[in-house]
Length: 213
Image 1: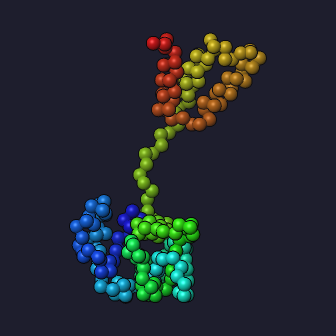
Image 2: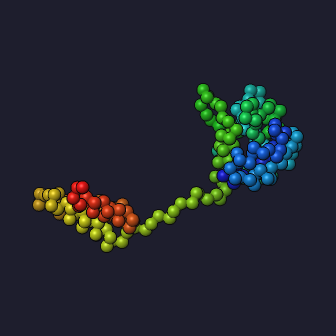
């Protein structure tokens, strides 16, 4: 939940009571979700203040309710007035029919009909991810890319290649020498190497220059 910006968790008659000492380690630091969790005796009490209730379950026979995918639900919720709740059932059995009856909409993922079993964590992450698409969540921090190397360093790299290739006859025949040099220059300038990459190339070439050990 916290990965995708959700912090309000409501529990209905937890099997092992609440607070549960086992929940802390399993939450891997998402303490704010545990600390703010509220416990209710019934599902009806848990969603009493919610204007829109979505039941995450497979489509049930005899239940005539709108059915959305997690993606569709994620698109719809931000525009709905009032509070929205997503119901998830226990790991082993899923939601009871009485719980589904409380919902106005069913949310189910299109998955392989030959293997339709999702565990609770998988179901939660599917819905949480789709909801997160409509919030200003940041991408994981990444190092800023280094700027391209200055032309002087690229010229040094190109010269280094030419210095090594010349005595090997790489630029022969003479009639093709200019074209071959231009192709080499194009290859080495096209990617926009940064200065660390250029230095790495130079280090490789310097190692190749040395006599074999």
